[in-house]
Length: 460
View 1 (spheres, rainbow, N blue to C red):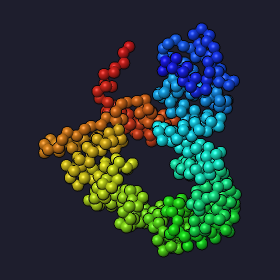
View 2 (view 1 turned 90 degrees about the horizontal axis):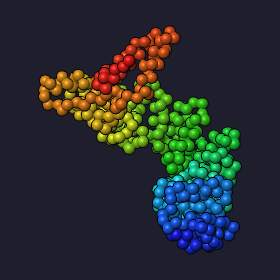
View 3 (view 1 turned 45 degrees about the vertical axis):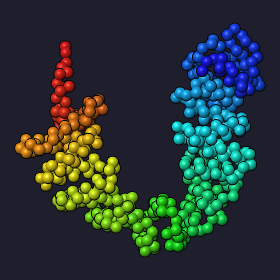
View 4 (view 1 turned 90 degrees about the vertical axis):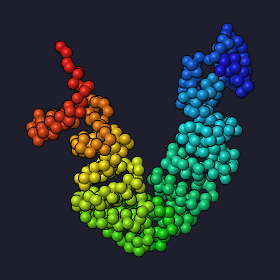
């Protein structure tokens, strides 16, 4: 933007020309004075940066009127750069603080719709709610407030919204939402006030948590016993899981607690949750039995991936490699790109090698190296199986060339060496059992870099 265009924009937004001093136009707005150098060319980047710094300083000092004028000036001179989103949000906030509500509403609606920064989009709902309250538009305020709580329940403004919402007419669902905010901030009395008129079937889990924090343990146990038996099937499943995690953590015998709760609904309430949680408290053999049951009965369970991994390695431990491979194939089909995929790709390939199904193993190893070339398992696939696959290639002539991944995967960095150095240092202090491990680590490093590091000879 040219400097003269900036002066014209300022004049159109409430500034008036007071005088011209040399090449500087002196403008005033109320008690504010602004000097704009006018040379008939575009504003310099340094000047734009200086204006932004002035705006940020004014904001920190809660001088919102000055902050507003500086952000306006910055955006006029720099309508699009890396600071634009921040400046637009801060300008809107400054206009809210100076009660310039009409412009603030326009700004925040634009931010809510178009800002590339998620936090600014969410915060726009808070300020639009605040402005609506100031204009006595309670239904609009509630709409914006609960939009904010939906997107950012633990956000900066959530507790402020909860206190404002206490003064509004709320539905049962809205009251529970507000109570959850209070409970998460340890505002127990406020949570109990909000929950007072909510039917027991909708509030029992949160009422129990409030009773626990108030050390009202008799009513805490009573609420849980009655609530779970009567209402466990009607509550939101995710909320129920969150509550049960909390409740079980307060009990001395987790296994007994989970078993009793599971029986109280005849296993109908979130059955895969109870099975999974009980499995975590069992020895390995019983745990795998439960995992297999979850895999068989609940094909869409959120615990299915972990259960499949457990069954996969259990089959392998029992030397049932064909069964392990089948489970690995199911896992890879259901959970592509999951965190455990590199591990399952590698071990499925390894078990296929042991079954002499080399062509199939080759496909898994190549997929592993293609998708996760920087991973530990890609390195293992490359190093551990290179000799086997190369020999098979030579004899059969059908496999494509196996890609070798250098350790540590791409480049040597100083962070890649300390493991071996740690072993050596421990050996110095008499921990001789680590010497062989250090030797192995150093050997791996040396063998992994035959090219670039052979030629880096030290010169005198």
